[in-house]
View (cartoon, rainbow, N blue to C red):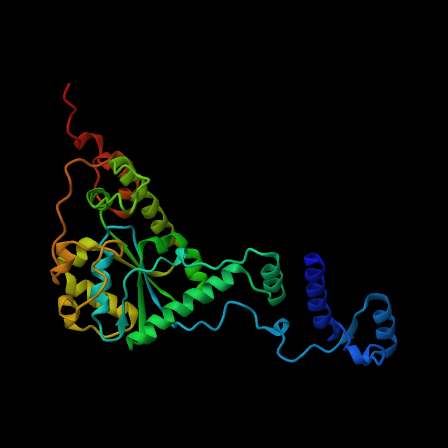
Amino acid sequence: MMACVDRKQRVNAILERTIGYQFSRPLADRAWRVPPPKLLNSVLVRATGYQLSRPLAGRGWKLPATGGGRLLTAPVFIFSAPRSGSTLLRVVLGSHSSLYAPPELPLAHLGVRAETPWIQASLDGLELGVEDLEHMLWDRVLAEALHRSGKPRLVVKTPSNVLVWERIAACWPDAHCVFLLRHPVATVASLHSSFDPAWRPEEAGSMEESVARGLRYMTVVEQARSVLPGLTVRYEELTASPERVVRELCGFLGVPFEPGMLDYGSFGHAGFTPGLGDSSLNIRSGRIQPPAPLPEEMPAGLAGICAAWGYPHPENEPSSVREPVSR
């Protein structure tokens, strides 16, 4: 039965595009008083129980092509690995009078279900896919959050969003991308020290797991950075020269620099809770503070990404300057 319905919808979509008619059941009191084309319809009704008729105005087959009509205009996406300073960058940007930077929202976890044959047939008839619906949902949710804020521009900060950067770029082609980098060794050290089994019960909290998780994100950040236009910001420079870096960010986003952005603690930002980014005493202090010193031991697995991002690592130094190994 469902296959029949699906075939009918597909045939109707083709018929309407080619001849302007569709198959439909004739009205009960008009079964043999068929509208034009009379001869063809009289045969069709007797043989199949259907007739050709003009589709009702506004039917789904006439929907415009998907991918347009987004509610958000030029949203800002911060792409980074976890524990790279994205919460600090969020609250600094969110302190601007024109920028709203809410707590994290992992878009990949906000999805649409279309599992039954009925809804799948309906979506086929509307020429929409699940990804199309999810993009509409993402856009609507973020647009609603922005509307409630009263500000004109949205900044989206969630490290896991970089894992779906291609979909984000397809959903919002006018998005502004900010790539936030931090020394990979510092990122992994922070991941390891902040491990909470309540959020990751499947992990043991080992350094090896932190290295693997950090590398997964950093590798994707580099992939996105090599394809998408945007601005690269280094956490170390943001904390060492905040005014210079924030001025550059404002120029990239097309908004004037506001000195109060550097005093983010004056704005009462929400979201300093576990699971929504950094919740440490440093971020709660309301002041931009220098990063923690690098650990003495640097995992060898991070040498490649350190080289790609221009950060030092013992494995990348010439052998002549490395310390000799004691025997």
